[in-house]
Image (tube, rainbow, N blue to C red; front, side, top):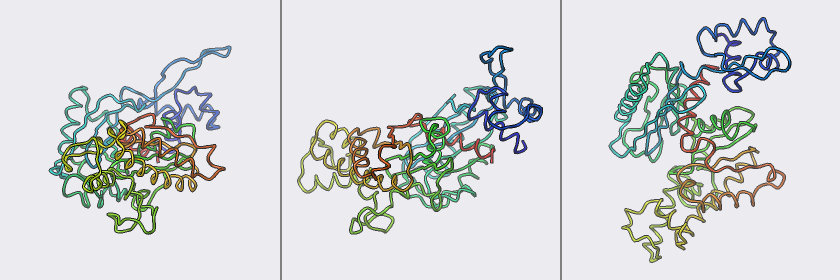
Length: 389
């Protein structure tokens, strides 16, 4: 497609179904030129006549939309502890999905083999072939060399060997489709902005609170990119100049206080010092889910640890919002899913510390429209976006 055709497809893809008159109004293109630009899109079956609109007095207008049947996309959420694969149509509807957990035995090569096997199984189940697929999007953990598709040196990966991994090349060789890579928080923010809770906003931010604090932001319709596309950059903002030493080598980072790792560390340290809890598991068997559940049930130590973590996160989030001025803040991820206390304290502390003129314009949402599928579906959307550049 030439750029003008891409622009027409992009409009229909994001705003459709649309009539030709609606497209003309949005683009100021004359009808004869619009017909010429739409012809190759219809011939390739990228767009189709989807339905008939309401009449304003004459013939009922035809509505055009993207083809939901003949073109598919694969989206992959490659996280530290699991991998999720989805197959979507061009409306970002999930047609099939799979997920597997990862542990210390899951090297990049093993993980890619499992992804390829999962894709093959789904293709067979759907009676689909590769000719139907536009490509593969991968939302993963930074830092990244996004252009080359390399995962550089992420922290806290369960498996071994996740240093300088050419994930784009490995997946293209395994799945035999073009692959595109971005950090997972960016892909989640992208799909929420285009098709989810953020579609009526100019600026949004997305946080996935888990082992790390993964952050994606959209400002004026564009992804706000950090150095090396490191989605954990927010987690390494200094919140206490005399604070604890962080895994990054700095002191007082938000992640020292507000991540799953820090919550587990502080909880077990308190138990070792004689604090009591309803959780009676051996120290090495306690999970963050146990702590979140205990806090929800009123356990004082668990409530104290979760509240402290959320308070620090909320203070950092207020600083972040004061700078970017988003209209929508989406809080997602394991800590948000398992702890209403963490979500509630984070939100309340943030609102309390926000610059007064910003506060009335901020909307919070728990989980976003796409929930736990946001990174994977967003990866599929990101793959399509790369064709429209």
